[in-house]
Structure formats: C-alpha cells, structure tokens
Length: 445
Ligand code: ADP
Image 1 (spheres, rainbow, N blue to C red):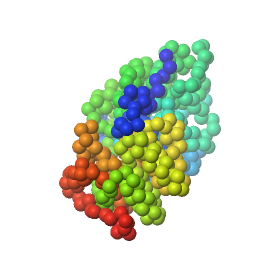
Image 2: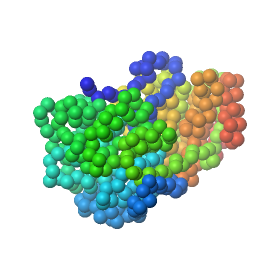
Image 3: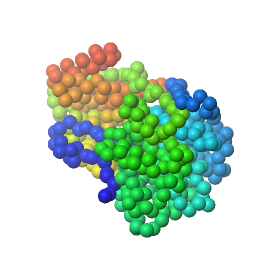
Image 4: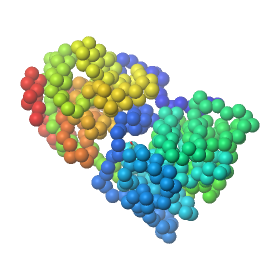
C-alpha cells in the first residue's frame, strides 16, 4: 500500500464545477499558508503552560546562545536569518532540548515558529556516529513533509554529517535493506510500510518522535490510526513532540494518546480584526462595471499588493484573462491548479513579481501578509444558503493588527442581494463600510 496523498481537489470530491463556490481543504490550506508567509507571526498574547508533573522543570530562553547548541547548528540558525527565539520557541526549545528529554505538546497558530523549533530539536538530538534512524517526523502530506525537510536541510547547512531521508510517495526502499540516515521525515502510511512491512528501520531505536500538524492529521481519513499504530511500536523512553495549529477536544485527546507526561504550551491566536481596515463598497451595474472598478483601483495601488476574491473559478479566470489582455501583471490561484502550480503562484506573488492576485476561497485564510494593502471582494462571501459569510469576510480582510498597518477593503456590489449582504456584514461587525465612487478612487484615504 502506498501512502495516501491527501491533497484533494474539488474535482476529486466530485463537486467540481466552474460555477460552484470553491472550498479549501485543511492540508492544502496549511501548505498555502506556509508558502505565502514571509516571516514570523508575532503575538501579543502570553504563553500558557501546563505541566502534569509539577516537579518537571520549566525553562525559557531569550537567545539561541543560551541553548548551548552545536556551534554549526547555531550557525545554521543564524543563516536562516533568525536573531532571537520566537515566543513559542522561548519555552518550546529549552523543553525540547532538556536532559533528561521532556515530552511536549505545543499549540499555536501557523507561522509562530513551531517547525523551526522541532527541526532544531531533531537536529540536535542526532548522534551522527550511529548509522540508523533516530528521529522520525510525521507530516500529513507529501508537500508538508517536503517543506519540513527543506527547513531541516537549511538549518543543517553547516552540519553535512547529519543525513535525512524522506518517507513519502515516490521514495522506494528494497526489502531487506536498512536505512542508514539519521532522520526520517514522512507521511504515516509510508512510514508504517517501511517500518513494519519492509522493516528497513527499527521504530524501537528512535529517540525522538515528532507529530506535526496534528489537526490536519486528524482531519485526514486514516492518518490518526496510522500515527497511533506507529506510536505503539516506539520505545517508552522516546521523546514525544506533538504540534498543532488549532486546539480542541479531539486534538487534545489525540495528544494524550501520543504524549505521556507532557509539558503543554499554548499560544492563543491573535484575533483578526477590522480595526485598522478602511472598508468601502462600490456600486456596479454588472460584471463589466466591476471589472472597470477593479482596474481603476488597480491603477491607484501604488505601493503594496492587492488580492481579489471571486466566488467561482469561472469569474476568477475571466477576470484574470481580461486583466492580462490589457497588460496587467496578475496572478491567479484557483482549485484548477496542481499543488506545485499553486506554490509557484504564491511564491511569485510573495516576491512581488505580480502586484495582483486573483483567487477564490482556496485562499480565504492566511492572507495576513504585510505587503498586501488592498483586498477586493469582487464577490461578497456567502455561505451555502447564500447568506453573508462573516467569518470568511473577516479572514479575507482582517488583520491581526500587529504591524499597526492600515489596510483597505473594497466590496463590489452589483445587485440588491449583494447590497443586503454588505449591510449584513456591516451590521455584524458594527464597522462602517463607506460608499466609494469608483470613478473617483482618489477618495480612498
Ligand atoms: P509554524 O511551524 O508555527 O507554522 P515556522 O517554524 O514555519 O512556523 O515559522 C514561520 C516563519 O517564521 C518561517 O518563515 C520561519 O523561517 C520564520 N521563523 C521561525 N522562527 C523564527 C525566528 N526565531 N526568528 C525569525 N524568523 C523565524
């Protein structure tokens, strides 16, 4: 059995239609969030710590030096451009590196530095003189495993003696061979095959077990059971590290199965808000006028970038084509693209090669990107019943406000229904959405 690949497109779900509202799945959303983000999300919230054993020591560091890392590893950390530990790393790193090893459950939103923390711990725990896998990291999908592997490869840039192997689709081992790499990063199905069926490495010899993206794992059929089956074969002395971007009962129950006697740390997510956002609506007679409004607005986006949200692929593609034909550099991201293509599109947008990104709900979260100053709702977000989808509106437009930066949101309204949705959103958030004359976009403050 080959490890499942769980990036499902809408097509695979049988829901595909160019005119159907596009939805996203959790694994994919998590991946895209990682790709579009340039740096750390800083949080004003405090770390919450729980210890089952009140005698277990609790440490915190303010510098990477304080961790007494292998100098070449420290060099790798600095080479990544990190100056000081992020908030979650301040507590997670000393716990992960403690001797005797300490089990950890950590929950904080994507972008707060969890991956960097456990990768650093994975690399520090390796004994290069032992030519067998000592560290296993489970990721929910091929792409997420590769992302983690790339972080590890960069951080280990000055430690060429540390060897890693991916256990993901496309990687093969022959029965009877043995894996000599120190670190395995893989998906649960493939890891199970390699460990139990092909027996190319011994789970009992692992000293570090990392379960990443636990919330995505749970959301993916069969993965939780596979993780538990792997976990059952581990040595009780193996250090367990469990990470999740979200927090709920099901995840905590999963965590308790995997991680005995843990230190649990949580950093509550910074709530998105509309406080720093100027919201406008523009009246349009139909799609063509909406298009005109967009190009007017586009003309005024001097610095910074814009994201335009459409309800369907058809609209997104139509708009992108029309704008491209007129010589605008736009990027388009819809469920039609393969994952590689999406990553490509986001990479280009993030690096500023295109100023405008046209997309559907495949990207309704994770747009809290510094350089995006204008968000346009070409179509207002609605739920299955056609009612105002205020959560999605907040995810599209809202900022965590940490930069104190101002953003502009523009809603294009072409029917009475759309106007009603706009009013419902205004009422819901109790924040004024001002009328804007698109012919005169100098009005934008
Ligand atoms: P998470 O796993 O919580 O999503 P990551 O570890 O991927 O977070 O970190 C998010 C981003 O912040 C990445 O681009 C990463 O390179 C960067 N980053 C992580 N730790 C630090 C740090 N201490 N200083 C600066 N940037 C960091």
